[in-house]
Image (cartoon, rainbow, N blue to C red; front, side, top):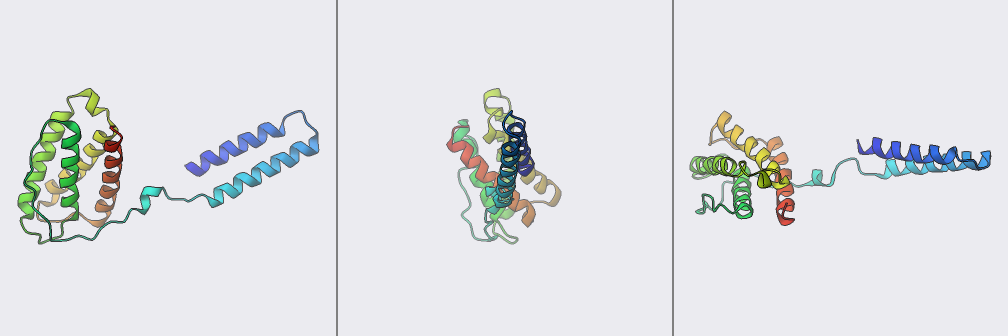
Length: 175
């Protein structure tokens, strides 16, 4: 999509300069130069977005069971806390101690978070909220379909870690 946009922009720029009332040879030469430059730029552009290079940590059975469950009713604090708990859940491997209790507490916290904050248009319109809401749906859906004892599959984990990074950036910007 990015390549198409750049190519279209380069072609439009080159074609407008080609139709200016200059000498015919100069206009053709400019058109060919601009087109060649745009083509070289497209070849040199990376094809994957920067967040696609995010490294997914291996699953682990070792973690510290959180004691700070529940909402404080301050959006930034609650969003950061839910994100932190979801990060732990995403990193858990099968056989982790108290994994079922962790999953139940997390699901309750996620449901409480969404139930409370989606009522406020100023919060519900924030990018951090919509991305966190998407992540919550993924984790809650996994728990509903597979239960609390089964870890998230690798493909789902990768996407969640990308979303967690986006949420963190948005929260740091106050968005």
